[in-house]
Image 1: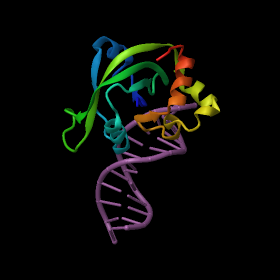
Image 2 (image 1 turned 90 degrees about the vertical axis):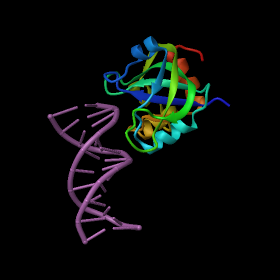
Image 3 (image 1 turned 90 degrees about the horizontal axis):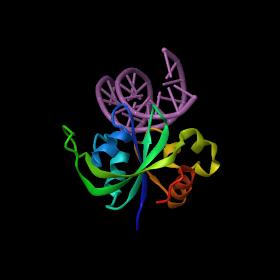
Image 4 (image 1 turned 180 degrees about the vertical axis):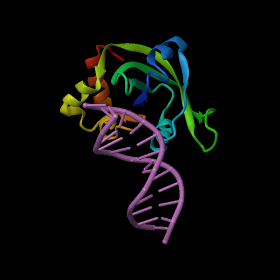
Length: 138
DNA sequence: GCCAACGTTGGC
DNA sequence: GCCAACGTTGGC
């Protein structure tokens, strides 16, 4: 059973363009326990939206998990993990945070409920709606 | 630049 | 173990 996620990155730190250029990229740097649990729950083949926080505030692309959780090499201590994700395709139309907030159907979305959570789940229903809004079919 | 949300730290 | 203080994130 495929699951869906949303991962956030500040484009100044790591942008969608860099993800596309690199193809497969380790998703490191998560230092939040809730986000870590979500990373651990990811399975190979799961899809995730790539969201630009701060600058942009929009879902800009789709990635796929190609390697499940393993110890984060950038962590100096603790049992932090990362996964490897691969760029799949960009959204034809980026879906902005404003557009998501404007639609009451997304009230339960983890992105809205916990704005600071950098890795959160997306339900299959929300995934389908967001893909439609983005003009893509995955 | 400000502020709300929320995680972490440290005193008790 | 509680809670106030503080730091960080992220939207506005």
